[in-house]
Image (cartoon, rainbow, N blue to C red; front, side, top):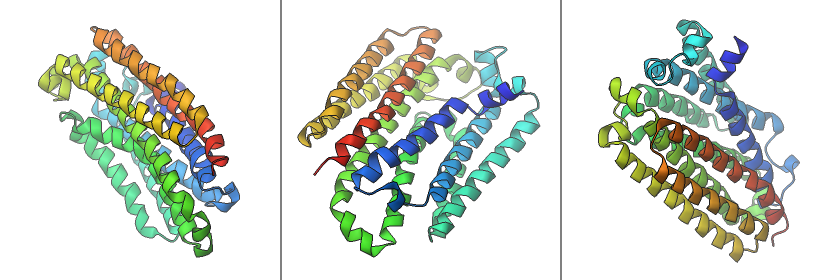
Length: 316
């Protein structure tokens, strides 16, 4: 039961979300602003921000499992997560519990930082996940873009709340003002990277699940325009990621972030290899494997933040 529960909420993805938020704060934002962790937002607020993101994401996965139950049963006979866990009503209850907990955690950190209106971010995120599973998921490309946007959002949230904390102290603001532009660029780089890789992975997953989606009337891009067109789109997104990586490398080289510059050659290679794999993929098992390879690419991007720490810390 416990094992089925963790599979249901995609615990690996939740860990990746938490780690990416920790890394973007401690390896990108804080060293980018040249401040110590004690000078940023309070630890309790940061933990609440992570919990809000993780809980809302877990709720989204649970709702997706319920909505996709028939499709998953067709595509993966005997491996349906909801059926393995047991009661569908229990899964629905868990969805509401996780989603409510995420909104409460997000509201608490918003109130603690004197911006209660920011609670709307978490309410709207939960609402967007609900609309995604109920409506957007089966619309060509719309659902893919929603998921990619939410993947990038976790990076932006940490930067937003850290900025709010610093802005609250006018004496701090002048001291860190000169570093805001470069930090903005670094956060934007990782948000763009997360968006492109997530978008490519979602397109690949749609091709992988083509048969079940088509059978149950889910009009994904692959179903609406064919798997060939979906492959072409996926290749275009991955090539965009490859070009984006090259542009980022130029930025790193220009700013003398040499460790990041050299590391991103590995990112270039991974993008290129995934383009080749997608071109060659024909069977469902190939697309499933490619989806795993894209997760490796995402992980490599997150790990590069460790090098970012040293590059930013000793800059200027």
